[in-house]
Amino acid sequence: MQRYGLFNKNETILFFFIRAKMLPGLLTNFFVLTLTPNMKLYPKDVGSFVRKLTLCKLFNVLLIWSSYVLTKWLRRPVQWGLPMTVSIEPTTACNLRCPECPSGLRSFTRKTGNLKKDLFSKVIDEMGDKLMYLIFYFQGEPYINPAFLEMVAYARRRNIYTITSTNGHFLDDENARATVESGLDRLIISVDGTTQEVYEAYRREGRLEKVLIGAKNVVKWKKHLQSPTPHIIFQFLVVKPNEHQIPDIYKLANEIGVDEVKLKTAQVYDYVNGNELIPDQQKYSRYLKQADGTYRLRHSLANHCWKLWHACVITWDGYVLPCCFDKDAAHRLGNLHTHHFKHIWHGQPYQNFRKAILKGRSQIDICANCSEGCKVWA
Ligand code: SF4
Ligand code: SF4
Image (cartoon, rainbow, N blue to C red; front, side):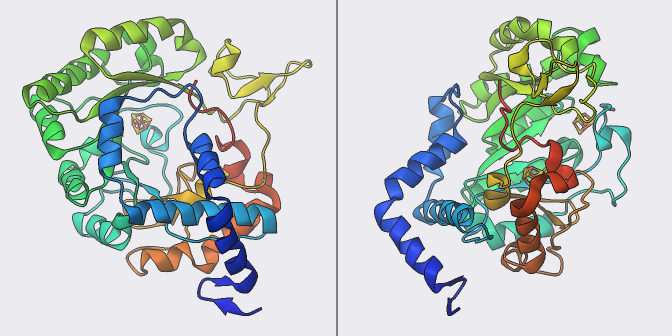
């Protein structure tokens, strides 16, 4: 079949048809997929996001979304554009010992280390003009990398909305000020309990008091520097041992002056015969108890994946991975030390992975129990 650049004649016709006739519907679908029904919007945060939008970024989103729709129609992978978001791993190291996390367990089989500034600037140079937002998190505690906030400031200068997720143990006065000054847009702090006992049930070796002081420091420096950013979120991963503290986390966040609380449902590895982490309240669980007492996923495993079309993960040493569920980097689709990002994104290993998802998602280890298609935020 005759090819026109990245796609063939039929795809070209469909693409222009989509652009001309279906744009409003596509954009509606896109926002339905991106925004959850109970999602609250915060004007200052929305302002930070919107100010960084460009026509180039919006057009890229349209390309990705069109190719995703086409893929579902054609049942073969079509990929246009570049990812609209990337998670990049500042480090694999962590000070805590959370039991379900390879950083916490020190159980990686891959190499461990810190992201270097030159690799980071290569990523931004190759794809920064397409990124709607950049997540400084995969595995590990971002603040352990001494160059972390410098990289945030670099992304900020390149007009990219930046997010990080931290366990909150490094937010002393100096780091809190530097965080605000870096221009970071969104700071997610994991607070999975409102008492030390409940908090440390999962955040082993963590000190709740230190985290709360850290959050207060950032709130203080935001006020002092009259900065609208970062938008501070307490992220509360709902599991059985802490579900009774849900009302308390809202009170605590309010007392400290945190902008938002987000309740997250938890992924559990062994769920079929029940698990001590699965909450009793059904709306906070990704798993459904059946009549015979066993559990199953609440959502069905559809053979497609929006995440694979619009996002990717980059490890500290430059490997490109399909998504954040590949914690030990088993599905390496290329390395940025040897290839340009575009080459990897449109390369054969990536297309093969996309094909495999379309064929049978349940056949891929990481895809059989992931959050794609399920309710992540309660
Ligand atoms: S704080 Fe985060 S990175 Fe560290 S051990 Fe816990 S889950 Fe893993
Ligand atoms: S693990 Fe889930 S999100 Fe990741 S590629 Fe597979 S289906 Fe998509």
